[in-house]
Amino acid sequence: MTEQPARRLLLVHAHPDDESINNGATMAKYAAEGARVTVVTCTLGEEGEVIPPDLAHLAADREDTLGAHRIGEVAAAMKEVGVTDHRFLGGAGRYRDSGMMGTEQNHRPGAFWSADVDEAAADLVEVIRELRPQVLVTYDPDGGYGHPDHIQAHRVAMRAVELAAEPAFRADLGDAYTVAKVYWNRAPRTTVEDRFRRLPDELPASPFTAVATVADVPGVTDDERVTTEIDGRAFGAAKAAAMRAHATQVEVHERLFALSNGLAQPIFDVEYYELVRGEAGTVDGGRETDLFAGLGVAEGAK
Image (cartoon, rainbow, N blue to C red; front, side, top):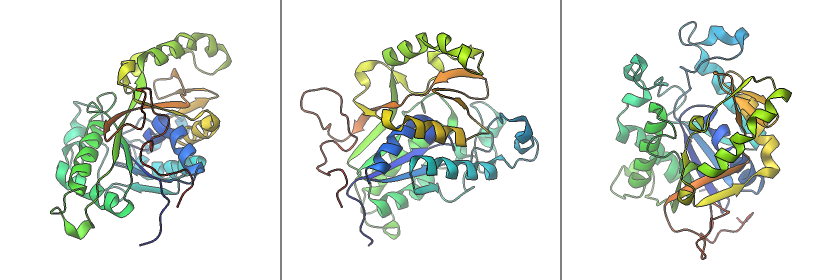
């Protein structure tokens, strides 16, 4: 087996762009420090709304070639944050974007929402047993904001963690392995509310004319549920560049961005998490400042 860095981080996301919006600064920080950072994306994001008018022909209701285009976008985004290992769950195109909750796309052949959870989890078990990450990051049970693919990504990731640790499960996928720590993406309510209060003053210097609301931010939760914060301020520009690479889905202006609804949101370069599996690496009850805290693996170690 090829020697791997001492610290190994696996992030599981639903669509291209989710990784950059949620974890761009975190990924850039750990990649710069020498950790192995792997991103698994569950779909190609084929049902996404296209922002640039000159790319509108890619949309699912026209040429239906958006998924192939977004492969290039996520590759460009990964370069911006220094991630060299990006994969699609089961291979590119294995699972299709399911559209928004309650739409007919939820039940189309191949839709991720309709996939058997254990079958999809097996695809991720193979990755976990190969890479042996100490830390896995994914969404909360609501997927952050209720999108079916985000909910399914949560289910698949959590099930894969269980199955990967079972010696009796699919020995052909590698030796059993236990992920030490699992985190869900979070955003502390008071921090988000404070940042949104300042948004209207920033609009005149941007191309945006209206602001989103706190409810538009995935994973907002009560402050006490947040166990971990990663200071990625040194990597804010890398995060913004990664988000900008997803040009069909995201418009970026300095520290603000908007999705297809055109409503401005802040780009957070301090990113927040809830530890839901494993032991916290703090002794005073405060927030962790390192996803690998308590695991005894030093920065830059082999």
